[in-house]
Image 1 (tube, chains in turn yellow, green):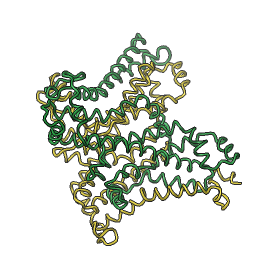
Image 2 (cartoon, rainbow over the protein chains, first blue to last red):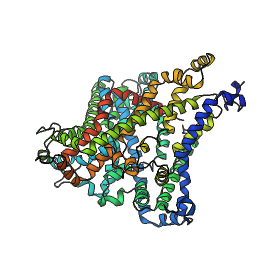
Image 3 (cartoon, helix red, strand yellow):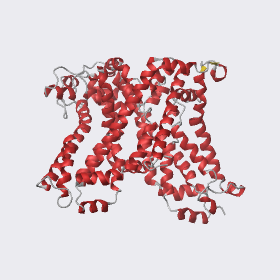
Image 4 (cartoon, one colour):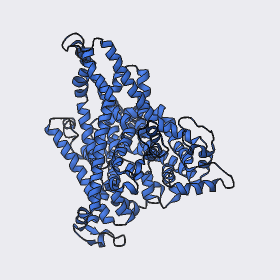
Length: 312
Length: 318
């Protein structure tokens, strides 16, 4: 009976089916209630951005102020700067971690001896499982005045005096990018490696017979073979572009580099939690959510138009 | 890196040998060897850069504090001592933080596993009448979120702040973990469930006795992801339990330690009152860092295959 429909639309909604699936329906309802509370209810909180929200008065009795908070945001030089910081650091991270992951996966794949390949892989994704607290902690040590980096720089004669890495503003973005590369290269490469291994080996054999060298094979077989994985991941990560700016910046940032290290999330934290201006913090959060969704839709649309693999 | 790429290019002609592309290299085998040597050097450096900071922290943690200040401790301790660890373990907030961290990891993982598995099972049922709606409901949560402030106000109103439960209840179900499990369940042969249904088994029985035993690999994977996330998380402590000392976690205590160099000295000397000790903030911090990463590093070699499985399944599109 229901079999006909299962393929396209799912079974028809009948009383009989409903009773038969009673257990499923009840549990589904539980999950919907849970999801509604923890994922959808906070969206109701968005009304705060249009109010002068005070803890005492709550949602219902706070004064409505329309778009005042948003107007303040976009006239605030600090907010415009944190947008720039978030966007630039997110983009740097995305570009470099993706490139490095692809290069690492291809190079690792060229190692045929699994006794060498396995340990390298194991080492490469270990940092992914360390918390940002630990990663920034050891990065701090490595870049400190007595750290290994300064030691190497001085011993090799490249610099005379100790480089105070964390007080030079223009170095902050590269340091953040490096931190991401250190933590995630091996991990991000996993998915590309598995895409490479799923490429039909006969393609390589055929290419070899035609006289293709290592570079030809990479260019004409490996890279096209991982293209769809690349695009799906790129779209997914685009949506996270503005999310990528919090933990590292919070942990590594300091007064001297504030102008380049503060991100939207830190701005929200500062205004919302420390200054107790919930309305302004919410407005900044809304801006971030909306831009993220627009970016992901645009990226998806672009992929669709180009006839590429896409997310949805 | 650059050397490597150059070499790859040189190899184009080297490997291709006979047919179309004229060979620039007289000896293709030598070029091949050169590539492998460069690749080897690159991989070696990569591993060094990855491992050195961790090994260095380990060495400092076992080195006499004052001695380490002189610099030059690299991969083996110069003046071996376990003093730093003794001091860290003597700190009250570290022991309590570790306990909370373990509790949130165990309870949080079990709850998340049960909830995500059950939800994934429901959504994987092809005949379920609300299947597509329920699926969409959870997929949306992956992309839309209310943001920091509204979420915090919600938790406050639910009395989740200043409580242990804020660690395990809010993140229990996640759209992503549900999708990963669903993808796996949908790959199982349908005949198994049909056979059980003919035998009169209900949905719950099928979930527990037929589907779940087959899902062990993916359950392990998701459990590990959740466990690592729970162990490493610190931001929720800072946001919701900053005022509740009894619920702070190890990571949070470590962060406090790393960011407050001065207060540490007070704590440490209080913990070892009366003793004259050669400790410094750097060496104690190193010890605390090692303690915090130890569980993950210790379990990691045994569990890594599950991580990889999850990553590969998770990569498939919705």
